[in-house]
Amino acid sequence: MQYKTLDYQVSDLILTLSLNRPDQMNSFTVDMANELIHAFNRASEDDEVSAIVVTGNGRAFCAGMDLSREGNVFGLDESQTPTLADMENTKMIPGVSDTGGTVTLSMYDCKKPIIGAINGAAVGIGATMLSAMDIRLASEKAKIGFVFEKIGITQEACSSWFLPRIVGVSQALEWVYTGEIFDAQTAKESGFVRSVHAPEDLLEAAYKIARSIAKKSQVSITLARQMMLRLSAAPSPREAHNIDSLSIFYVSQRDGKEGVKSFLEKREPEFTSKSSTDMPSFYPWWE
Image (cartoon, rainbow, N blue to C red; front, side, top):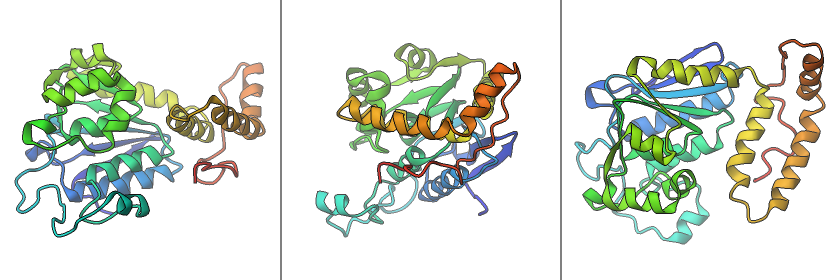
C-alpha cells in the first residue's frame, strides 16, 4: 500500500512511522486513520519489525483533526441514529465509529511495542493517540492538549480508558475539563512522558529504547505487551496467573532455552521465534 499521509521506513528491526502532512501540521483525516490502521496491522505481522517509533514530519506531531473539510469534519454520518446495542454488537459501524478509536484499537491489538516521539504540537487526536502508545518521549518544543471541550465535544480514541491509567483519574479529568495546553516538562512531571529532550536528540533517544527492545524475543515481547495491557485491567490476579503460567510455560521451551544458554555462555542471545508464526496456541486468549 502506498501511503499518502504517512512515511513508513524500516531499518534494523525498527519501524519509523511518521505522520506526513507537514504543511497541515500533520492534522488528522479519515484517510490518515485508515492508513494508520493498515500500518499498525502490517507492522504487527512483519518479522522485520520488532519495535515502532511514531513521530511527525515537520514542526508538529499532530495538530488534531483537520477541521477544514466540509460537512461533518469527523467523518460521521448524521443520518444514522446509533444505539449502545449497535456499538456492542458491531465491531465497527462506518460513519459512527470514532476514527481515532479505530486507530488506537489497532494499536492496542498490535504485537509490537509502540514508542511515541513527540516532536511538536500534539493536540486533540494528536494527544489521545499518544495515550495508546507504550512509551512516550517529548521534545522541549512539544505542546500537548486534550482540547475537546473547547469546541464542545468529548474526548475520543479510547482515551477514557488509556489516559487515566497513565496519569490517574484526577489529572486526566483536569486536562479534559480545561482543555489546557501544557508543555513537555508538565507532561514529564505528570508521568505522561518518560523524558524530555532537545529536538535534535529526540529520535535517537527513542531509537535507543527501540534497539533494546529489538534485541529481545519477538514472541516474549508480544506476550509481555498484551499481558500488561489487558491483565492490568482484569478483575482478579487469578486471570493474570493463568496467562502468566501459560506464557512462561511455552516461551521457556524455545527462546527461553536460548536465553538461559547465552547467559551461561556469557554471550548475546540469538532469539529465533517470530511473532507472526510462533505465538503459543493459547494466544490470543481474549478471543
